[in-house]
Length: 174
Image (cartoon, rainbow, N blue to C red; front, top):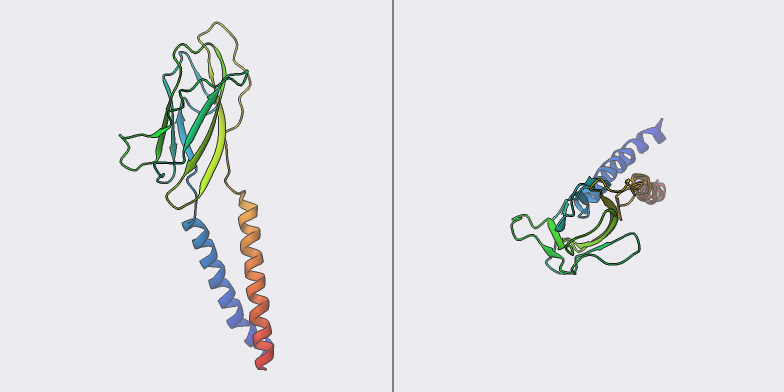
């Protein structure tokens, strides 16, 4: 029984450290894709004048890009990516599109620079279909966000290392 009594404080410490790591990982979250106009994998019935993307965190004024290409890979945006001046939260990027885009599938590649110092990238497609041509298959919206299992693995590994260190310390004191 004495070994069980020694383990209880260590279990409590490991639980506390795990909760701290989980809280810290949430605090260090990145500026992830939230929504867009045109919508990711959506279809619009007329050519949009611009692409607007909203992110989950405030962005820096520099270091952000949105590049829109047609099915052949030709750039169809004007290269004027900027923060939306009408968004007081500074979470929205805008890029102008060339006028008169034809029916087809367009790919939006984006890179943001959040104020927490991290940068995320992602892409999605949208389709312009005025009714003259059939729509193509969509591409899922993506971002550079870590998969949940990677976060859990990192937290678990950290907890194991801390537990191992605490165990060695307790064993030395015995």
